[in-house]
Image 1 (cartoon, each protein chain N blue to C red):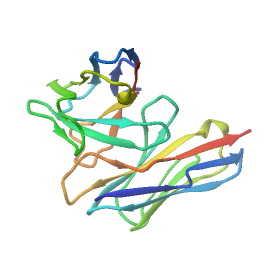
Image 2: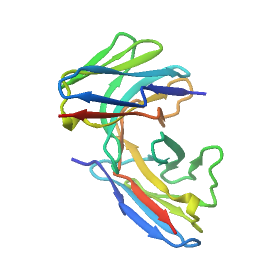
Image 3: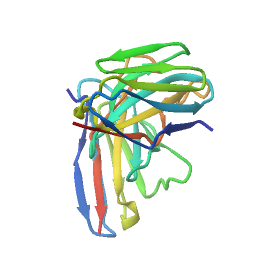
Image 4: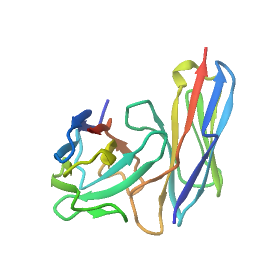
Length: 118
Length: 112
C-alpha cells in the first residue's frame, strides 16, 4: 500500500492565488522530504529538499519566495505555491526515504498533485 | 553534474515480444541506481535498486542489470499491463546528496 500520501490530487486555481499541497509519510517518520516537478513527457526535476525543524534547501533556479516549504512535523511537509501563474501549472510530486534504511534506501513517492492555473 | 539518459524515448511492443530499455549515467560516485514505473497521473512506483556493477535483480517479467556506465531493464514476454513509463534515477555517493537525479523515461506500450 501507499507509504506517502499527497493531497490534493488535482487543483485548479486562478492566477494570483496561492495553493498549498500536503505530503505525509504514513507509517514512518521522515526528517527529509523532497519536492519534484514534472512537465508533460519530461523528467522529474528536483525543486527543493524539505528538512524537519530547519529551512528547506532549494535547487538553483527555484524561487524560494514563490515555493514556500514547511516541514512542521516528522510526517508532514507542505509546499505552497504563492501568487500562482499559468507557467506554474505542472505535476508536483513529493517523496520521502524511509527512516532507518540507510542513505540509499529508495524514495517512496506520493501520487502527485496536478496544478492548473487559469 | 549528475546526468541520466534513457533510450528509447518510446517503445511499442506486441504482447510477448521481449525487449530492453537503456539507462546511461554519469554520477559522482554511484551510491545507487533506481528503476521506477510511473503510470499516467500517478507518482513513481519503486521497482529496483542496484548498487554495484554486475548486480542483477528480477521481479516477475522485469530484470535490471548494471554496469559502470549503464543499466538495462529487460522485459520478458510483456503483457499489456506492463504499459507505463519506466524511469531510471541515480543517487550520488560523493556528495552525500540523498535526492535522486532522474532520466526522462521510456514510455512503453504493450499491445495485445
